[in-house]
Image 1 (cartoon, rainbow, N blue to C red):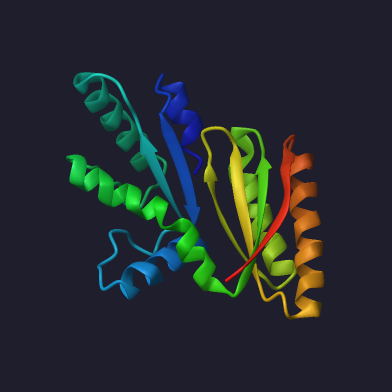
Image 2: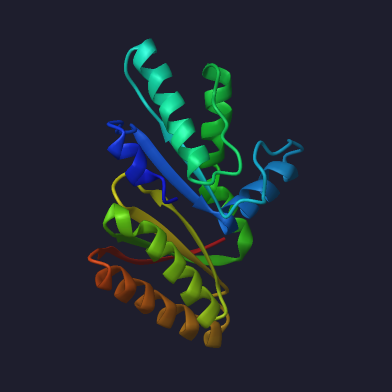
Length: 194
């Protein structure tokens, strides 16, 4: 996650930069396996980053190599590269699977929408995980880190009044943390039941 600034410093601005934390990865892995497919990523990592670049063929090739090098030097445990349209679609299917995968973690979820300065994203994700631990909740985080937009999803059971008090407190703590890091809560909580 801490590689974003280094990639921008290299002169490359990815078209898309997405993050999926370990809870999201675990949920996607479960969803993929339930479909009888083999996952294309390892659950050993703390997070999965998906990046896309655009431009002419030579520029794209050069940018991909620079990004892969930065990621490896920043401690990435694995770097996968799409070698064609089918491989690219398979990798982006992981991102498209986030919502259906996360809803499988519980019967309800509160989806938050926050934004923080890009350089503060690792700190915000760490704070969300601390909040999850403090309130004894699962909070899956994914988002568009190219613009600092994160979607912490608090997994819950709306039928459990005591849990919902913890969810509300965690939601406020997430918003407060985002604001303290120079960001903002950019949408009200939404509850979804499945």
